[in-house]
Amino acid sequence: MKWTDRKLREAMANVEASLAVEGLYVTEEDRSLILASIKGEITHEEFLRLAKERAMRAGEMPDNLYQEARKMTDRIRYCDECRCEREAVVKQRNAIYSFRKEPFDIIEEYAECTVCHNAVSDEELDNKTLKKISELYELKHR
Ligand SMILES: [Zn+2]
Image (cartoon, rainbow, N blue to C red; front, side, top):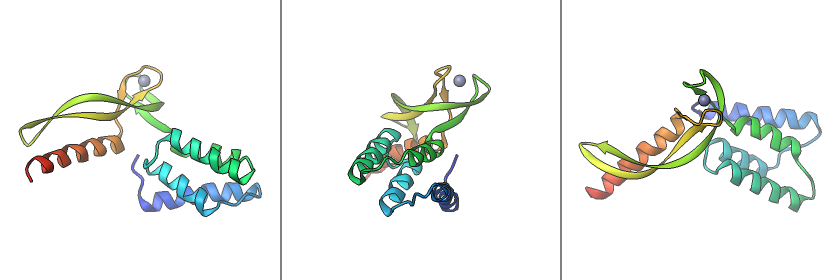
């Protein structure tokens, strides 16, 4: 799934609306945390850790915030093996890619189905890998 600015704003608005119903209001800090998580700038683990830290500082438990944000940030991907949508986890592996006829050895992030453990396609991670390779290429040919 690709997050456009519009989709991000919609997702944020949904979280805020459902929290407002419960009498909770999203602070600027929450908002930037959720956004970073949706955009993949921080990992899900980081997000939960930071959200917990913030909750402890504030002396409140924003369980609703966790739950809502979790739904949006969990990687639900189509698995070709299972032939349905599954939860996926991000893993790392060594890979060699050929870019403009040159081999590049990198550590890439990929998504894995939590049920059958096969790799599932993930546009966001694919883009990240591509960016990494082209950066290496640029570095080499500067
Ligand atoms: Zn699967």
